Length: 152
Ligand SMILES: [Zn+2]
Image (tube, rainbow, N blue to C red):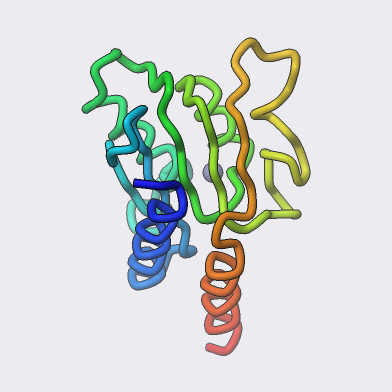
């Protein structure tokens, strides 16, 4: 699956999250061969868990099925919104080779917007970053969610 196709799946997962009241964010982890290892949506509200971001859930699930212990070397994390500091940190710690995201998050993004945790030269592992993949679709989904919530 290409990052673009994986983003399509992440968008579906994000829409699911909106359905149960969570901010619509979805994530997919691709193995080195491009096969889907794991996918997840934001479950922070649903689980009452401050760390249940889509990226963390997807990385955990991917490590369970990938053959190299906790390491996700050569894998790609695809997520609809730029990762926060926690998720950017999790991406670095999991050793993914690449982080692909859709919409930038100027208020909390840690992959180039507010911080750049994933490419911080002080860290010994730095995933590549590909930003802006299907950005408009990702941003539109988030905007619609917040607009609807304000309208309630
Ligand atoms: Zn996060």
